Amino acid sequence: MTIRVFGYSASAYSLMLFYVLKELGLTYENVQPNNYEDIKTPEYLATKHPFGKVPYLDDDGFHIYETRAIARYLINKYQGTKTSTILIPSDVQKAALVEQFISVETSYYTQPLSKLVMQLVYLKRQGKEPDLKIVNEAREELDKVLDVYEKLLEGKDYLTGEFSLADILHVPITFYAFNAGEGELWDKRPNVSRWWKNITEREIWKNLVIERNLAQYK
Image (cartoon, rainbow, N blue to C red; front, side, top):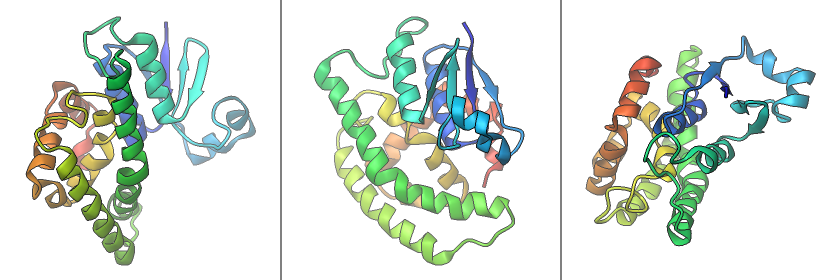
């Protein structure tokens, strides 16, 4: 059995999958594109990702793209085979709550956060100046979202009450926001701050940060 993740090693979306794979106790190979043109070739578009994006997964000949779909696939196939960690419960109602918070993450949380990180981390690493208008708008939008999270996390250590895929999907991009000095948005809210501590102090994530040298991305 060979699991290959094709994508940039420091990409937030690749990191989501690395986190899932490690929580499931799975070994994998990370294949990185040589350059941006690699993921735009006719062969890549035809056989790997029709929109020319990363990551995509090759699991012993089975190909699948889109990060959250890949994560669900891995959990559905391998959960419980190597570790006791449960990322999507078998109970229908508990699983529905995980899906609910994945939808929340996708629809409300990651959109403004991605704008912020793009300006403060990715453009900076390319030697470009951030657009402060976009930065401020993203901060304002994220501030409102985190106000809702503060209420949702009342009396809970994790979004559904138990650690799940929904929590994992929040981690990498938020980590980069903290690296860029934006941590106060989370730290000033006690419930959100407690949740963030819980999901980033797991040994698997801490080891990933070291393994991938993520502290340099700021």
